[in-house]
Figure 1 (spheres, rainbow, N blue to C red):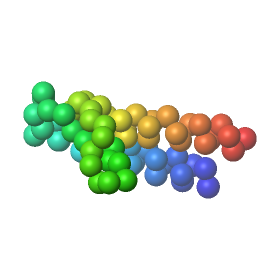
Figure 2 (spheres, one colour):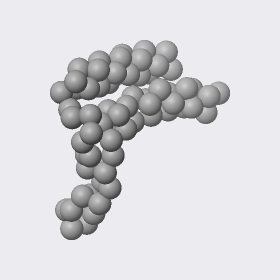
Figure 3 (cartoon, rainbow, N blue to C red):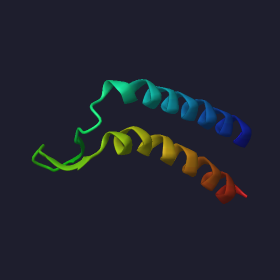
Figure 4 (tube, helix red, strand yellow):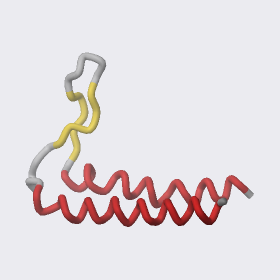
Length: 72
């Protein structure tokens, strides 16, 4: 069961990295992108292109080993 989960996590991580690599040249380098919206629907936090594209793959790299260690 754990092995299947780790395999799925690795596959999804590879997909996320691939999408980030594909999107990198298509987004402006100096742009600010909304990363959080308030209850009123207005963006209230912004991030750079790199932060927006690499945050989820970074989380995907950290979370699976954490859960594997927590399962022992």
